[in-house]
Length: 158
Image (cartoon, rainbow, N blue to C red; front, top):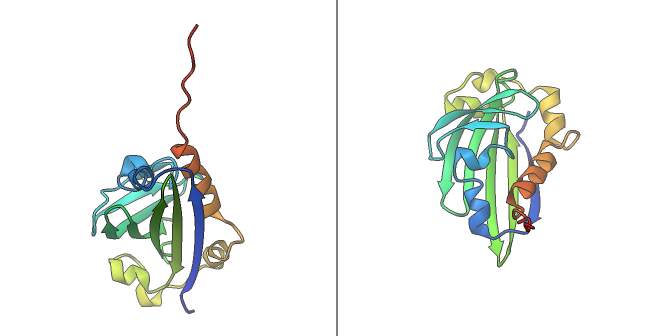
C-alpha cells in the first residue's frame, strides 16, 4: 500500500507566539494533542502520549523549527504497524494563526524511527479509514487547541 496523506487546517484567534507555546513543550501539548504528553520537544526525543480515549501512543520528534514547525512520528501501543508521521506548521497573520497538520500513514515509517514493524508491517483498515476522514480525530484536537488558547475571563468582584 502506498502512503496515504491527509492535510487539515484551522484558523485560530491567537497570535503565532501563543500558538507555538501550545506546541513547544509537553505541558502545552497536554490537553489538546492528547490527554497527557510525556515528551521533550527536540529532534530525536522519544516519549509517550495518553489519548483522550485512553489509548497509549509512542512518539518520536523528527523536526523542530522554532516558532513555525513541529514534526513527529507516532503509533499506538495497540497497533504498532499503523505508524504515521505528522507535521504541524503555524503561520501567523497579526492576531490570527493558521495551524496546518499533515499526517501520512506509511508502513515503512516505523523502521525509520527504530520501532516495531518495518517493511513487513501492514496498515490496519481502521487506521486508513480514520486518516481518510471517516473518524476525524484532528477536528477534535483542533477544538481542544482553540479552547486552550481562548483568553481567560476576569470576573469582576463586588
